[in-house]
Length: 551
Ligand code: HEM
Image (tube, rainbow, N blue to C red; front, side, top):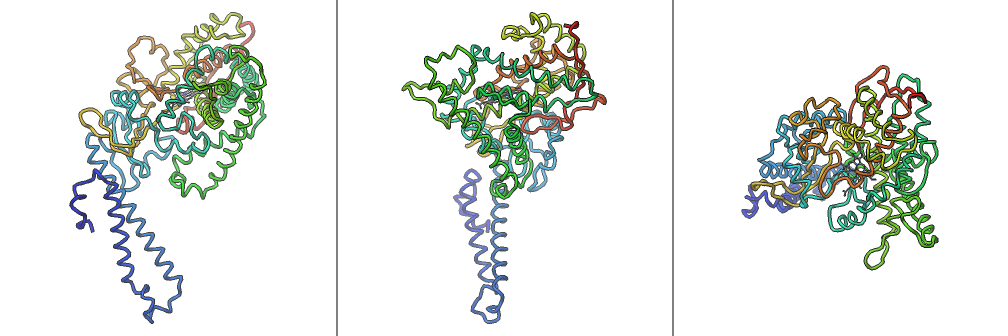
């Protein structure tokens, strides 16, 4: 069959879509011809005409399946050839045919160290295939810089689409097109320091509840802080993004909390379970039914809040955005374009939902790992506490200015995010062949995965890379693009200043109230890359109440 490929296509792999179409037609034609020669299809032949019809149906199904399989395999083989030809400049990790490298990366507790190991072995650049997805994994600074700062490859990879039903056109998962650019322009001012300043009281309000909850854990040998911090972060983002207090920490609106965490679990499941990766098979799964329920709850809440707030704003006379509490939602509702037109309901909902997702698990992970690191490094904890006591006047109310002055605590957070980046990897997808330096081609249809986890732990840049040393950021020797917890360039984290303030405020509050100690027994973290970085065996510490006289 291959011998009959027309000359115009023989040299190709460039136009592999055309070649694939051609082979597809040929396969179907070939199989149809073979099929028509088979005895059971000669209906008029007496010998076979009395055969039960289900045998011929089974035969048809079998041949269709074989045809589909042949087409798929041909397609994969051709695609592999195309990628290999174009990617001669990238080393490929040896792979098992058709499975690719999935067996090495499927376990989320092992994938990070496996990817890090190859990054060191192949000098920061290598090719793998995961469940038929061709991926270039990158830690090489030059390529990372080119990719993140450039405007050529701005689309997120296909995995982000698992969040589509919830977040739809929101900033995080949308393609880097004009619509995204416009959204980014509209939303950026919402993170101006004058706006962020107003959130500090809301951080305080939610942390007060958190401190009460932690107080009940004092004296226990081991407390897994992750879920407690996660509820706190959800309360904070509900208040700041939507302007509502759901009191998740106190156990109310459990439906909403369950819907958020249920959606996050489904997204992880889809990324690692081949049966759920493709939409056609996922639609038959129980997760899909659950997702529909979760999305309904999540959208009902955000729709309801947006409508309620819209009516309130319409009824308020002479609104002044500088007065009173302000949520991101208010800013979006008050926005008017050059023609005086407001933003559509859908636009606002997509962004509010995006903040809910992008703004809670990320900060929760970072705060939990910071608490763990402080518990295991008493001298660093002591230093951070002393700074907080010096800066915060009466030891109770922490102001925006105080937070700016907590420089050592900022180093602690930076070091936490170096070792435990909440988003340990993020990826883009090419929609056409792109030329990198010296004519090197990055082919169309490939995922480019930036492995922030390994970049942040590169032994060539960081002395004792696995140790928690906050002051390493003081000497100024860290190369640009050697530290990327918030990504960089046009698609960097829009919420990083907000996150920094929130983390500082909560950590300062906790340190003022509790001494953090290692859990008994003190087990090592089992890190896993899920929607964010988590520890599979929890983030366990021990708490001791600080006495009033300590303050
Ligand atoms: C410790 C906390 C946080 C970390 C480590 C973090 C990290 C990141 C990273 C690495 C990206 C790039 C992802 C990618 O390229 O796919 C990102 C994007 C984003 N983050 Fe964050 N984030 C944090 C907190 C927040 C918060 C609090 C918000 C909102 C209130 C937020 C909103 C967003 C949005 C909307 C994007 C997408 C931006 C775009 O594509 O234009 N993040 N974040």
